Image (tube, rainbow, N blue to C red):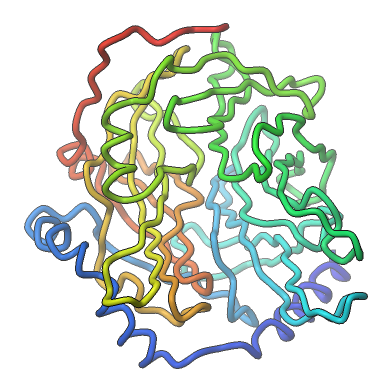
Length: 372
């Protein structure tokens, strides 16, 4: 444990040298958010987001895309951090990406421990964590081939690691053999209830036709397609046309007999010739049984005070990227962990009631196929 923490903080010190002008970032944000103005105005009258909290980890300057999970009285946040400007054989410089976990007090004010997750990869990205049968399953993506090799082949693959929640050591890790595209990432994991017919681990592969896979518990490298809609879902297609292609985000969690998830997309606003990318966050609810049909979706993205205003990584890219969610039943609210501008970790407090009021129903002209 100690050696891993020393390695982690060495990486954090290396990664902390990069930074850009905060004032310049604010200037560019003003030119990039014109399309969001009407959403901001509407949600100021009917706010979805309450408190916004920035997660602070000592020694960490640029951690992002956090996935929050609670288990056994612990609040764990898995996150990505990078080490920049690594020299490789070809003479070029590349970036290495690692995954670590911070244990917080439940109020998220104090960090109790930070541990690097030993994934045997210098290029692991975008962790998403769920709990199933008292084990943490961590989903992430890595390159198809070694980026440090002279014959690097582009593309990424999805992987899964079983993690002991007490020690945060990796019990087992596998590549998931379901390579439908050159780059596979942003799958949405969720767990079926123990003891039910739906018991197991599932993965939403794509949102447009809502393709759902089931992971083999005896062989984590094997995933089987169990259901897929025969056509694009109109309400998701509407989002895609207005806000960019909807892609995975947080894991889905079961609340009041339905699965709730937060997804992301990006679009290029009209900015007078400046190439800007805005990454935004949406929400969706789907059925708790196969074929897991989507039931409700936000029409417009979630906005909040201070959005995009943290330090940024690339001067033309502004992100709010959801990667984790927990539900607090006593307060009837979600805590959604997001990465902002590839540099900052935040947690949004979202009232379930306010979110429900903003969701629109999804209608189906045809019954979706159930291949299971």
